[in-house]
Length: 106
Image 1 (tube, rainbow, N blue to C red):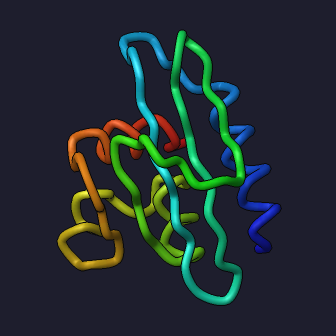
Image 2 (image 1 turned 30 degrees about the horizontal axis):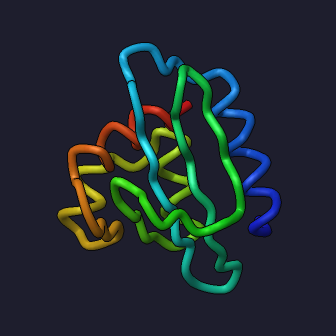
């Protein structure tokens, strides 16, 4: 999967996401490895934005390789287990990272 295909997949998931109860969430996702790239997911005013840029005032940054991120959003990799096994790195608020993981799961 290319980075652009991943971005399209995340946007489709975000379109159907239930963001009720989330006032504000800004998470930068750093994809490492062969198809590396950076994008952010922002929940603000009841809307979800997914853009291929860095987010300077983010709640946290999540770093994973493409394979593990796909497993995470497909519901095949538990975010807590991924963090424990060092397949997922979080820089910033880990609570917001968990909130993000629940948001992007199919």
